[in-house]
Image (cartoon, rainbow, N blue to C red; front, top):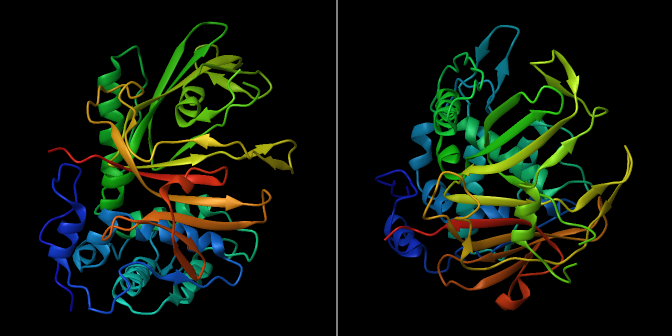
Length: 386
């Protein structure tokens, strides 16, 4: 039995992450310590997502020990147990996806095989969502969202989610409305996943007719960033994408926005801002650009991003003076919009080297190769406060 962690992970911990991990667990002498490939059979998008999460330091502290088990919510119908609506009985196998995910991470970090097949996890995913695992047609970002949602609900400490009444904005100060919205979120969602990955976006709408304002503060577990097109700049960077996300946009009448003041649909302007940032920041580059209802083209622009020191202090509204992040993993996509290959760049927590995970192969890579046109989902960790 592996030793259990003595405390839960939080964003205020200090010290070296690898030292913290090795103090919690003992690695067998011949273990691969995360440098294990995942066999594909047409689901490389699953492999890429898993390798990114496998190299998330806080996940390792949680899932390589028995710490996560104390939060398993066996009564949550939104989790990965077996729930029957006919007889209203929840069988006590709650959290089966989370248990399987933990077992897989242990195989990747404590095992000595050069590659393994995540068959049991894919089987459970197929049971939960038959269309999620489709050979050749999956998406690592969609799978990440799916997996993280289930991990969150499996570990949700809220046993019975209450009804939450949402109050109108009514010109109240941002900090009051934001805190109220966040507290409402916490009434229904409290897990280690939520604590690590969730932040808050502010969305402000203004009716073009009556000028009534409507403001929401919504939680997020991942931010999808648009990629600027047709710009004066020769190279794009991540800050350009964030600026485009937060740029005021017009909502046309055809799209429709219901104004509670006019009591009908109106044209409006919308402004999105980042209000609160999490310890682990996942950024999705929106490379699929719709060209019709059924078709999309892939944007292959190189978007430069920092491996260290992503400084978001001027982009977050709640004056977070510690909003500086370092990269530790990238899910890459190569090829066409639907088809193609997913791979992962990840920084190993133990030896601090970067590796390229290409299904069953694991190759050391120069960090100069990390920034590429294939970058699709970026994983950043907030710098620890000393």
